[in-house]
Image (cartoon, rainbow, N blue to C red):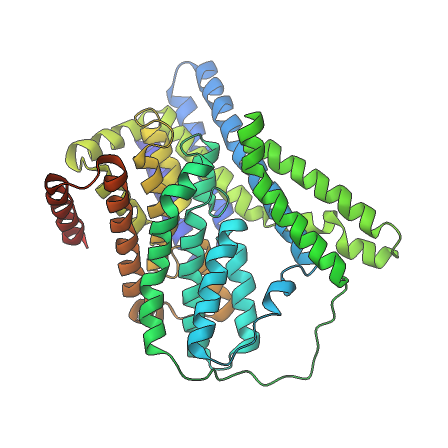
Length: 446
């Protein structure tokens, strides 16, 4: 089974070096995923057992991919109808501090409703229209990344890792929102308060280029599609709660409803406009390479679990680290270096039978994996998107933002622990002493 680990590690390395090697991470993930299962089946006498294990994993993976495809399509439909323009067109300020807070709050709220990647792309694109100075714009973009990752961590649809935990049955929407809202808010506020104290001058606004954006949708259509799209996304957790059907059934129901509504709205328009607003066009814009990347990674992790490798890692961590708070904190830090999807997938497989639904372990994992990626610009999909749009320098981010993001991450983690201890045990001298010892351990790590 050592070859499976070698294939996974080599694949992981190639994925991490995607931009240097110019090999799409989806291709690497698919290659590694299939090779892991191939090596596994060749080393096990009972090939039928392996086929049954693969079928089981495929059913779980499909539920995640169907959900992501539905959610990404709904976001693309809103975008094709210029729905986000309703939000960004209302930002009118020349105060640096005020714009900083507006961007952070918008990113935090929108990423909880939509997702952190879409929110970052929309807001960073807006900043290019508002702020002329490159480094000043970079700073705002970094605040958007931190806030979007924090906002995405506390809802089941805000970050792909939280979505995975929800679909996998590790967390429930109402519980994760209740438990993670305050820690996520602290994670955002800590760097935001510091940066807002150091800013206060007027924005160096971008001079108008004389070109006006022509919107093909009417104001009514923009409002209708934006409201319906957001309501559909919010409806999914409610649908699961009422029917107990998987979340992807709710997102597919919502997509079908929105699709029907779009067809009715535009059925009398000429072919060019109908094509522009068509859901089929939105489907083509969906980033299918990202979906295939998730497929490949989850195949890898499924193979390692079936072969028993993840159980060995879990036993090692339990024996040598023990404290699950520390384990999850390390996962968050690692997610700033490598993608958080395989890390969370591995944790789900390793500890799936050890902790029940809504256990503190899963809640804290959702927080750490969702916000830890902000420590480095390459540590999250939102960060990579901002880096690509704005060409943000990696070392500039490390010098100006990484420490603030790390402190926000730790501050949110401490908030989570304190909140959990107060809710569970109340306040006593013994508990305060235990918390002090725990925090000393955390600071020793960082």
